[in-house]
Image (cartoon, rainbow, N blue to C red; front, top):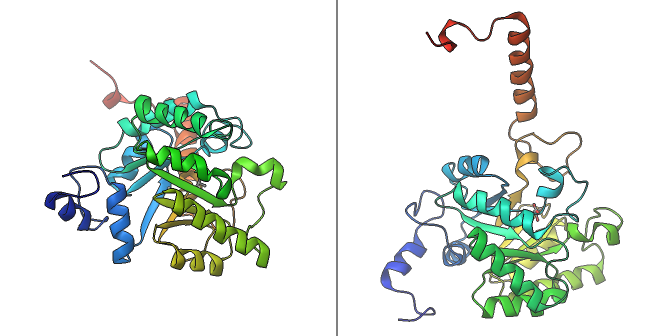
Length: 289
Ligand code: KIV
């Protein structure tokens, strides 16, 4: 029995559904591949700490992404660009510790893989060895193909990310929709095929027209994960702070807000402060005798 011929137990595990399926081990790339064959759609959320990751794991989110969106959603930077490897290792390790079942994917941050495939390998190994993640994500299609190939050969599962790649915010001059027009659409298709050919197990399609994302999804055998890619990708990812209403100010058009945590937390903090000011807290039941 070798890595390319699964045991009967592995086969059985891989055919269980992602939602309500296997709960006694972590979700694997094999589970995601068979979900695509079954046509089962799945969700991914970002997570940056053990506490929130644990909530999402208990809720049955099968894949959690320690995104470098930690830069602007967790660490107070304006973009993802300043995020370092040391920060990604620390945040990823916390997310791994806080979860039991979800596959944990960690972003390789800006500057940690673009130099060479060897640099990509060195930093992917840090995320796997020091943080314990099950896969890494990196941005770029054809331009990242050689690095993806080396990582996959070395046993690192790679999720690719094409379309709007936020680490290129300064080159894009913002966060414009990608893949509009014939030439851009053809390039997106070439990028998608290049990352699949290089061995990526999945690819994120960010901010691309829904019709194009559907076309890519149909032409690939690996699962596509949409964020601003319309309804026809195999999976959907959202940044958790956007999804739960923690983000201050405007969120992108593709976000659906499922809660208003910013208001809930703010109200709780204001009520606490008011109780302290007025002497209502602590009451007798919060005090020792
Ligand atoms: O860093 C991140 O959160 C991401 C998602 C937007 C896919 O890359």
